[in-house]
Length: 121
Length: 113
Image (cartoon, rainbow over all chains, first blue to last red; front, side):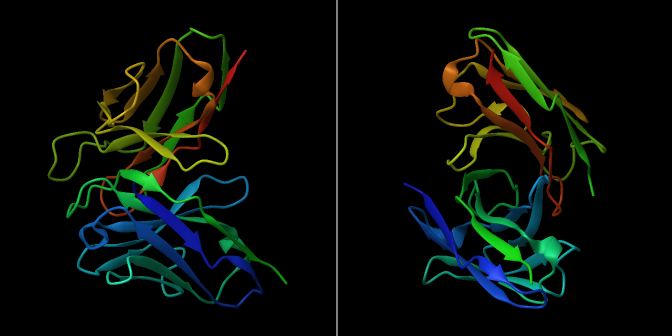
């Protein structure tokens, strides 16, 4: 059974940093492109970052230069390092797995339950 | 970025009725190397992870009941739930996956009248 479990969220002051983790199990983690998606209060889902199976990354313009996605295939874990956090980064952050191995087609067959991040003084 | 506009925001129907949810994209979702429409539908129930229902606009994901169907092409898409069941109460949303910058519809809440 595929399971994705996010952790690391919490309350942080503006300008602060957090590192989110997504622990994956039940599939060959290294073979799949992985994404971070967030949903702020009362907002649509917003795509944040993607890392492919070779470790190549891309980020949304809204977080570029502040957030970095990475992966540790030995630990089956996805990360999101967030710095220079702003109030508008307040959201629940989800990791998501694409459905097909070694493809870029980003329809997700599994999502985590999410970890909340609150940026406030 | 491609804007996804979903309608209606909410829907209240009786058990057994048909639910129809629309999703419109600001650009055609026929893109990339695959010749399908890069559009997925998801179901989200409170306290549960989001569940993939449909991908490539009309391909039902494994294990999804056949009362769920997706249709449409280009920039206009529909999710249909035939014969609404109590367990279908949820929020449904669309997502496009043309290129790297994914975007989502705002969601449609489906309730039983």
